[in-house]
Image (cartoon, rainbow, N blue to C red; front, side, top):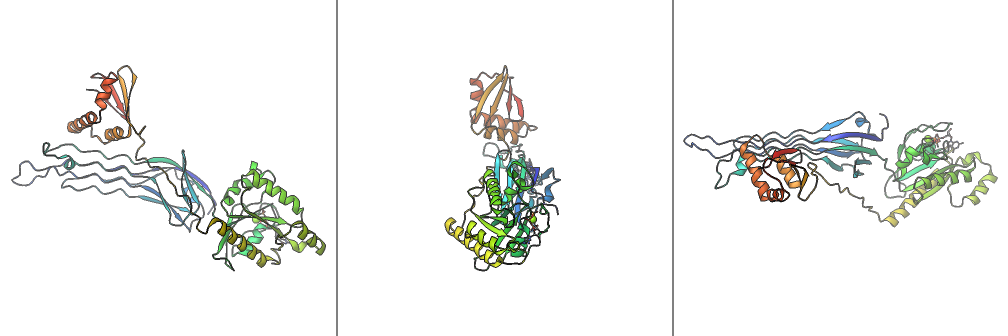
Length: 417
Ligand SMILES: Nc1nc2c(ncn2[C@@H]2O[C@H](COP(=O)(O)OP(=O)(O)OP(=O)(O)O)[C@@H](O)[C@H]2O)c(=O)[nH]1
Ligand SMILES: [Mg+2]
């Protein structure tokens, strides 16, 4: 599978089913009671974080994902069947955005996010029977499901992110520390996409995950090389390990790396330095580097020298960070607002748009208009009654509406009476 870390598509939840108009016709009961059932709710589109998927590849070619429609209600007070939900599996670490920003951060396996809620079903005529209106012959229509354009972004989740110049030996270190077998090569940019490895515990409480990303070059944060695109994958690592080739201007390398992290807005991240390839140094140089880089582990991914000590070092740093952060890092839960449809405003507003043309907006009236069965005279009558009750008719008169003028509510237009 290709490593894909972004995808765009539209999610469309199911339309709610319409309520039913029906009368109970039993023998010897000439005027049976209304028994039209409610429409079923539309299905939802749900994202679910799973561990056995590492890329957004399944979504690169998706344009629209639709959930099932709710079935219409029927006689004998039967509620229509609910539309089927669509569950979209995404890798752990997927962020869900719409045009207004972040909706959800799926960082735990099994975590779910409802990206589009199904429209609710309409009420059947049975629901409108009262002592004075025994045989209502109207019902409500189902509401459309939510629809929104979604952007998915994957950020690999790791505890330790390896950053370094190309060829520093990051992938070799990942291989030395974990069971991962990334590609290693004697040329820059061997690694083209992030790779993860799980490091078994020695003294630390849990195993931890290391992310290996493509090498950074100077100017990476401005888009040079491959680094910039992949820095965001280590942006959420708890610790960044700066892997430096000890045999090639290590001070200069550290300066370049820190400058790139700074430019990428990552200068506040906890970091540590690792000097790699010390097998290439003579004793004198090793001594010099112990002075120049005090407390910095010196290792060789090639010979295995110092690798165990490095693991201890990393585990200690992680434990110290745990203590600072308090072990349970409470992750920010998504507080995305759901819109069953998109009303223009919450409160009621009546406006004159031009001569003989008025516009009414507000969540309640817009929903009422969508619900109304315009084919049924009784349904339209109920709509009028509700408008009166909500004070819309008075407000329309106040702004000058006269019989015959055009009134628009949401998508619906009708003549003012
Ligand atoms: N002598 C020596 N060579 C090493 C050591 N670690 C890695 N190498 C070699 O250095 C070269 C680059 O190693 P990689 O692990 O691919 O380096 P990288 O940092 O992942 O490189 P990119 O993915 O291209 O950024 C390979 O030829 C390795 O065999 C080491 O400790 N000593
Ligand atoms: Mg590599």
